[in-house]
Image 1 (cartoon, rainbow, N blue to C red):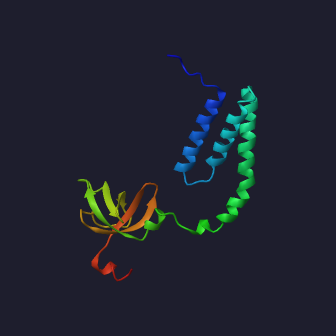
Image 2: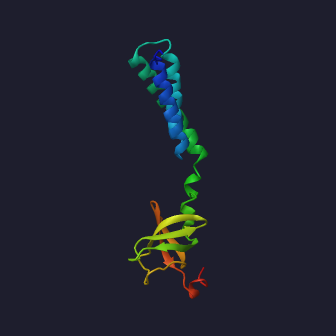
Image 3: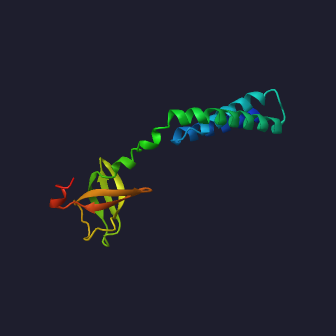
Length: 157
């Protein structure tokens, strides 16, 4: 059985797929241009054998597309800075403690059906327990800070 010999074009196709996957997995509008640039380099590599020239073509196409659409994307999303992402919208929501370790330091909270690692808010005075209702005071990275909801807190919200 013979080995399939992949030329330079195959590597550019692989790069195009990697950039396309990266675009699909990130909330930015950045890797698409590099996927297109790699696709163009894959096509030109069928006619131009020089790796250097194909790299130049890839970079020129990618950066030209990126630069030419920056202003357009900024106009489309100029009000997007005012919008909160889904995860930032959980600040101010209520949740329920579903797990606490012995020290009361590692806490897992369920918020709108999602589980989050949580820490007590710096102003929280008592240890949290399972089934406590909590209020999300802020989000930082992949965890949230919570404060226990007391009966008189419901009147404030």
